[in-house]
Image (cartoon, rainbow, N blue to C red; front, top):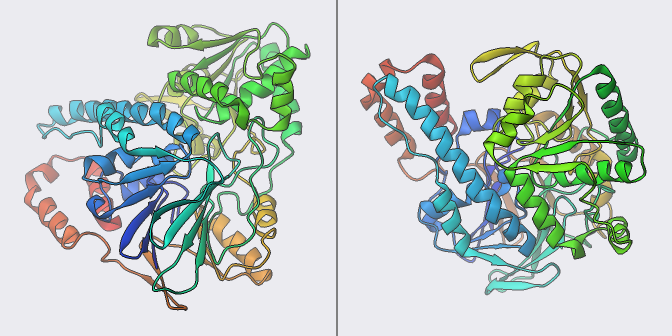
Length: 513
């Protein structure tokens, strides 16, 4: 058995790990890099040949876990993608939406390249390719053991992170040896978040791939933050401003609607106008309403009372660009929830442009902001940010609600791990910034767990009881780096016309391949 780590290693985004068992290659997630990791590593190619992948096991629909499956398909992947039924439904809207974003970004870059006399680039993948890639998805239920090939079985358990999210239990037998159990957390959910059930507990694992997004932080009580959100809304409206909430279209938007709806229904918030300005969020909310059997007990009680927890008076969903543009004319008294959650794309950037500079407004962050994203830049104290080529002052009140996170915090991670009946032989730490990972590893060391922070291209081999960890800088297809350098040199005329930023991005991509 061999494990290779290609994504979410040394960063939070881009989850992508290859498990080799009995000469078969199983990809655990195939996500996009975001923020700084995207600039350094790129999303347009893989460090392996997609044709060599036999299966993909997808933990959940978020783009940093699913977003490069269409590219995998485009570059020759012929296998099947296994996920839960809710994950498939969410991917059916998220991946084509991602394809549209890739097309729009390529179009924008090509306008700049045309002015410089450079050749056009093609999008990483299109909405059409994304739609076609859905044909290889296989929906699978929770808690049912599925056999992929001799010596390999797996089972999905509820990860409590987002609708359909899964912890994957993998059962492996090689060379007639005893069975080895590998567990992959995907993204482990936060306890007591609205709608979604808490993460399921696992009895044991020989080896564990574990996320560490908040391995160095403790979340505040979510109910305290919901109360504070009510205060923020009232105070902002009194100042004559708007409340802008950058929110992930899948998961966070629905949780925020659930929370606001409770305060509308008990009359603590009156005459409210809430606009969900994201077609993807609107589609995702409809999918959430389809899977009410997956709700937690509190949400089910609300349903049984005859009330829809995701609907309330004063809630509006905008769809067209024209409707979105009309919102920017409203000076006060509205809540606008819009994607993307890290502020790097989508309609949220327009709403920030019209509200971020206004001290009477409030910007409420409700999820993780990756290093290098616009959201992280704002939270880190930038005085101005560039939006659509214009410098915009950061004068609005900034609020960062980490208790609303869909990720387990330090306590949630260690409590989940300590529910095991015995310690794993090895824990592979992924999906975390260096500070979070080092802090969490130190905690595990204190508790006598054997844990390793995985780096890009790390390879872990298990062979008849012996184990070995190495870092293979040659894991890319043979000759890839050499060919890429030759290609760059041969495009010297192209290089001469590049601006500094574009040239640095090209060089970084070569280094990180």
